[in-house]
Image (cartoon, rainbow, N blue to C red; front, side):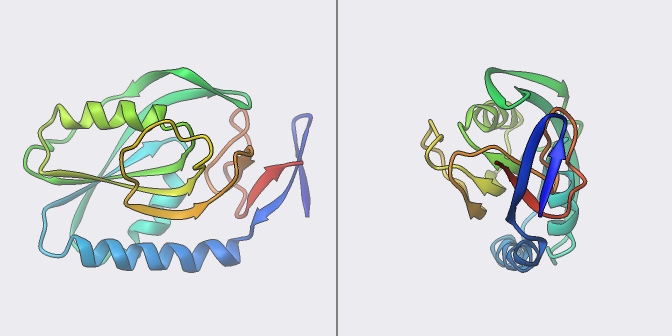
Length: 176
């Protein structure tokens, strides 16, 4: 099935039927890894809101949820600069932080987030991302929980957007 967003055509790449069970697996793994720990989950807005909502329903340990908002995309391109749009409002000191992101491609945004979070002195910082583009990745920090590794193609849906559109699509689509 194809979707047109603005002037671009996209086709289904990862259907919702594959996304759901993978999120359940990630939630189970995260629950096991954080059993008995003081966990705070930080969702990266706007893209991660759907993934975070679904993932958090499968995390069985007690956790606080908060958000940060950054921006590093314009149209189809990831920019080299990251702009912070919303601060962390929680005390992270001594807590185990799980950053939930929709996609890690170059890693520039996540690198920025990691530096920012570490200034708050957490006990640990882990990363959960729905999508990872290893071909584009420019850093060496670990991604602890990865839903799917994908090629370096532009994708929308399930929280990911093209100029603000397409986040609401239940499947993940790639640019045709």
